[in-house]
Image (tube, rainbow, N blue to C red; front, top):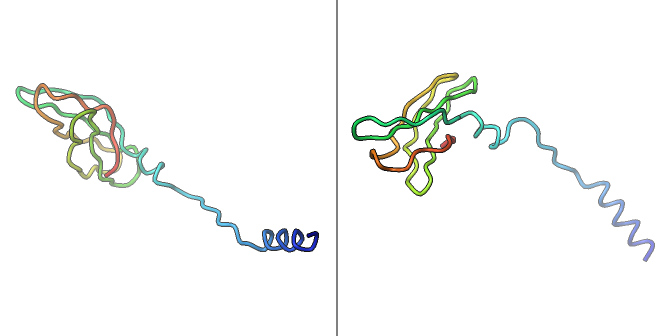
Length: 97
């Protein structure tokens, strides 16, 4: 038994370990921020802001309603996206597509 435990310990030490660093998908999702909602005569819109130094595709996420379509947002820029009709629920956050 002692020999098999030593063998397992040696195998565990010899097994390579994968170390992941850099940006992850969670970091990428942090690029798009929801700023505010506004309503025109017949539509509801959300303003999204890209806080990253590269262009990203973003969308407005709406509770109990389809999310907006994806739009390209330039680095450090804002975009308005239509989220539905005047009486639809408003967006509550931005996300990457």
